Length: 103
Image 1 (cartoon, helix red, strand yellow):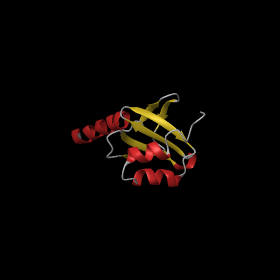
Image 2: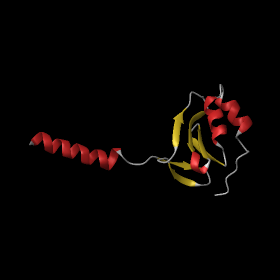
Image 3: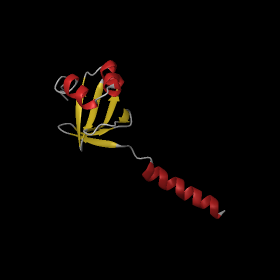
Image 4: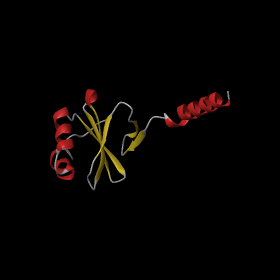
């Protein structure tokens, strides 16, 4: 009986704290919930993480400690970024400054 009570308490705490949605603050836009994004860590020194939402063609990128948004980024561009030998080079040449968001 005590074991069942411990399990119930653990599950309650996990659901209350462990299952909370991850969100990030993007410069200009504010808070964005990452639940509906496909997020991947990178091995780049500058670009720490990239999150993509295919249905909206919406890319957000963590550069050092800051997050930046990019709109109308098609799946091919995102795949090319994630497969690039140099995330930084690809991002700077093929994404940065080219996919401005007006939201």
